[in-house]
Length: 239
Image (cartoon, rainbow, N blue to C red; front, side, top):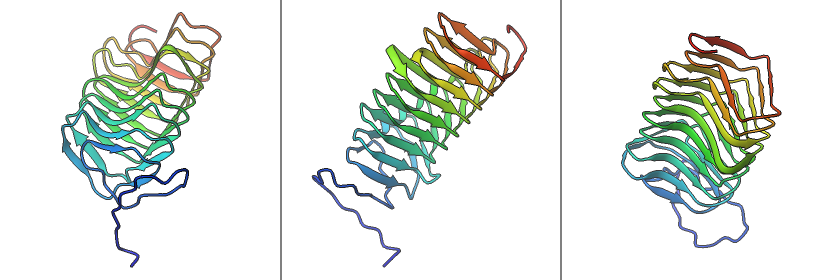
């Protein structure tokens, strides 16, 4: 009947597209197959390093507004794969809410993320990703896009970011090219925190953001060819 749930194991489907519906991954689960996972229950008290680890291309994780909570290092970890969407998640964790490592062409959308120490969203060596419509509260930093070489073509749009740590910064870019940061609301409450910190980056477009901070509103270091327009900045310290 229409209300039934089915659990099945698949060893190989080649290039066939399929979905897994009505399934909540257990704590520490590895999504190593393509398709859609829609959560029907909470993940609570998880102490695994990765609460959910995504290691396949073409995955949609729809948390369906369910909670992912615990003391592990990463709420959702996306590891060296492409075209992964993480959406509608409520994540409460110590270190990293969502991390994309060497993951491209992904979407992180409409998540509520609360972290105690590090980053709400962290991209490392990741290109052409969209970070949109997220609500982030962090005692560390909000969003960090980092690479030892370069990140390309990432978009940060329509996010609400609040940081409370002494050095908490809303958005940090390091070694990024052709990034767009637009229509975000950023509030930082730490004495040494900044609204945005852009380092070793170029061709960054920063437009229509609202920033309230004690430190600098937008702080550029060793960065060039960037466009900064129509931002509202309120600073109570350095500017």
